[in-house]
Amino acid sequence: MALKLLVTDIDETLSRGETVSPEVELACARLRENGWSLMVATGRILATAISHIRAIGSSLPAIVYDGGRVMDPLSGKALYETPMDPALALEIVSAGWHHPVELQIIGDERAFCRHSDVMTSDFFAASGVPVDNTMESPSSPSMVYRVIFHGVPGCIRTLQHELKSRFSGRAEVVQAGGSFLDILPAGVSKGAALASWIETLPERPELVVAAGDHHNDLELLASAHIAAVPEDAAEEVLKVAHVIMPSVARHGFAALSDWLLEWEGSRYEIASPVVLL
Image (cartoon, rainbow, N blue to C red; front, side, top):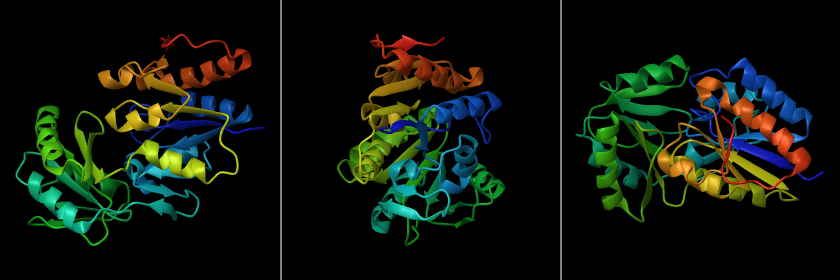
């Protein structure tokens, strides 16, 4: 049987925080029992995504770093990746240095930041991820995959406008949640990473369903046969939805899973969007 593939973002789509709800875990088990394969596509690094990957029972490669890497969750090895030019990363860090936002530079399963970037340090330290918070002036490690800024939405939007103007054609500048701004190598996205992985398969999936909630999911959603988004997704994301599911707080991914099992049994026409509220 041809592959039926469900590719999902983690934060505010599959789950909230560091655990997947029992309702969603059981729903994912039902999907697997009915021939579905599950895959994660997230802005997280592998170390902070691995518990979610295990919870949904996925053994497929994981799209991590917002598409900058595709990694084997069992071995931790990168199957392919797109590093950022350290000189470009330094320019980006310098451009955002004096904005009232936190900074994260993401290397190979490790992070770099300033001593003042307390939320960044605390999150990675709590996850057991090496974090170097000694940066005192703009710099970049020799191996870097992306730069992230975190702050209040208004500051993030201001910085996004500035960086898009300055780095157009040289880097991807995309919101990954209202408070996060990701800067990636040009051409990198979750959707591009999924397309590259599918090209390696002996047979293309019969059906690809993608789930996501924010701007960094748009390319992924556009590449799928069915795009599913939570009811509280970003406005631009809701516009591309074929299926609107309940929010994470209401275990929306479980509702999506059950709908998929019903839908594939009948393959009725999708009136866009189907609302599962």
